[in-house]
Amino acid sequence: MKKIIFLFANFLFLISQAQSSFPFDVVLTPINVTGLPGLHSYAFAQHNGKWLIIGGRKDGIHARQPFNAFPENQNNTDIYVVDVVNNQLWSASVNSLPVGLKEQLQSTNMNFYQDDDTLYIIGGYAFSTSANDHISHNKLTAIDVVGLMSAIENGTSITSFFKQISSSNFAITGGQLGKIGNEFYLVGGHEFTGRYNPMNGPSFTQTYSSAIRKFEIDNSGANPIVSNYTEILDAVHLHRRDYNLVPQVFPNGELGYTISSGVFQISADLPFLYPVDIKASGYFPQTQFNQYLSNYHSGKVGLYDANSNQMHSLFFGGMSQYYYQNGSLVQDNTVPFVKTISRVTRLANGDLEEYQFPVEMPNLKGAGAEFIPNVNLPRYANEVIQLSNILSSEFVIGHLFGGILSTSPTAFTDNQTGLTSADSSIYEVKLIYNPTLSTQSIDGSNPFTFNVFPNPTDGDNIQVKFTVPYQGKVEYLISSMNGKILSEGDILDYKIGENTMSFNLESPKEKMVILTFIFDQKYYVSKKVIKK
Image (cartoon, rainbow, N blue to C red; front, side, top):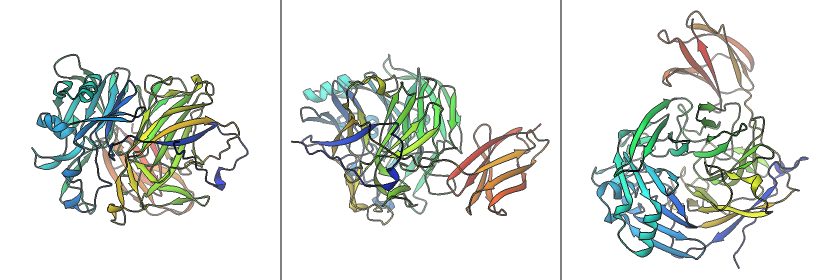
């Protein structure tokens, strides 16, 4: 019999007088596929109950020494077809492919999206033999999922199932790829060239995208054709990578995505905590709410309950700046590996709430893993599961595969990356209806506020009134309407409580700017300032 992992922790903070808005226990059941190696930060697609796994890495978290970070011999150079139901595995090497394909398809942190039977892969980071350097690949590859999987299973040539084009717009790693309507959304990420260096030495160059790159793809010809390309730049709110992009159904029924957390803040090596919603009409930072329990790319899934008009986003393990220990919320700025399984729920009125499940991951794992959804469940066009259309009291929502496994929460910070490895584990994820389940939400509210007056203003000098709830660092950013940062600095003269100060916008050429205050490297508030 399969061993079922069903761990309940006795966290006092979960005790509540109210029923849970998500009355389901989470059950993780290990699944074995013989011969499947440990992998993390890969791309996947699926067809007819089988998975297609491409790229990623076979080692653990990257070393802190530039000469030892992201070694080529730990690239995943095999493409796998996985049958979890029948415990079968097939593989083919990328080395039979042309240089541009085989180099990109063994990279890590690619941006990918499955559109019907086509898997689109953009970018990714790895050592390139042809460039003789570690690069972010400037490629968009379209893959015939059904044809490739069949060829791998039958041991025939795989070369005809790929199409690839190049563009500097695609040289991105650590972002996410989604689709709304006919438009693809390449969100966040960065272009990274060279070897990682924790001291920001000269071994690399890095440019954050800080953008949503929108475009359409025509894949009907010999090569994909990209059209209607546009960029939405915001160097403050879209400065994100290695985050979770969770598909959403918004309270008005609109489909879109939410950027969940991600790294790194502009002036601190810490995660962003507030989410950003993405819709066809634009993007919307939700700075009134902080998500504490999941800050790094991990397995995630979205479920929408149409009866209550509530959107539930689930996160599995990974790395986080915050976690619960003996019932108390702990802040750890090293952003350690955690076992947390958490949920963020968007209520019918748009408010966001965060909860921790009483079940945890079985080990410190989940960073760089993927949640592979059960496509037999009713779903919306953007893969959100239609929770209210499922009548069973227990059902499998999908599987978790891979990620980074660590034996120490602080293995990376302590320069003990040898304590980490690529995880070969697969877990079936089941929900079981439990109407008696009670949980308590975590306070994610933003206690910091500020106001600007007069607004509109006659010039660059304004008055700013802000409230400081406790002693903490206060920073500001001034950005243009096209998303560029014009000025930044610290506010030094203030007291706990209400403050009023004169403030110079330092932007004589701009008729409209965004003023953002950051309190305690945690809470963001942005205001638009108009000059007459």
